[in-house]
Image (cartoon, rainbow, N blue to C red):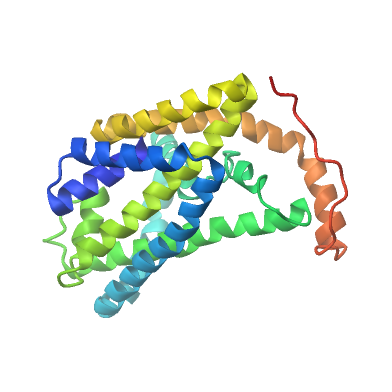
Length: 299
């Protein structure tokens, strides 16, 4: 729902297309891919990911070059705001801590899924020599999502605000990002829209596989097709729903995933240390694991 809502909002702001129309188109495209299963999802995503990375990162770099005189002040402002005495004093106020945790954790989860237990579902379908090797590959996702993409976005936004505080006053979320990308003459909003659509749609497809695996475990293979149909319908609902409602639902359900998964991580910490020592610390990263793969009885 969240990704669909972001796509419909951006398309409406950029091209004036109704969220209902965007929702119908996105629902059909998602259905065509999702009904095809994991191979269809993987084929589409492996083409979308390089495209979205290229459009968005190149767009950010171009804007940073345009705003080059404001980049150093922007970085300074980010650090000054984070470590200012006001921020430190505010951090000791109960309500401020609650808000910081609420939005910091919630948006952090959306940034890279760390702690949700969702990404390992895709990693489990990968062909790899051993689990630690795949885990190291999976960890790079956090680096690219948060350290690279989010850092570039932050510098673009803050430098744009410093450059044009009046023109960007009162803007937030996608509207603020869209206004910042207007720095690229003519094609800026189009670059942003293409980047957002490919980012968000690949997420919709990837998460459909996560949910499908979990639902198959709970209800059996016969329940997979109804799940796919429901998933496609919910994409449309997300496009047509109010922004605040969609985010509140998403944050609540993310928390419902995170809590049991964090308990599992604590209980499996011994296994993690043992596998890491065996393959990474002892230099056996290229060794093929001969451990039997656990099987789950399915109805």
